[in-house]
Length: 68
Image (cartoon, rainbow, N blue to C red; front, side, top):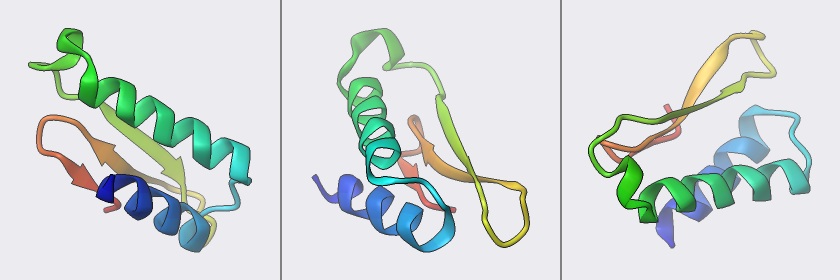
């Protein structure tokens, strides 16, 4: 999926997450997108930015926003 590549590239560029951590985030975003339980919920996945130590939006389910 396109969002998988976006998440992977974003994490590689902006975080110090290892490959296993990135794969976990991708699996979690896929679970959110495919689950009827979350269909009408707004779910966020944030990651810590290596440049500022602040959380940055990685994934938002309702808006289908990735990597902000």
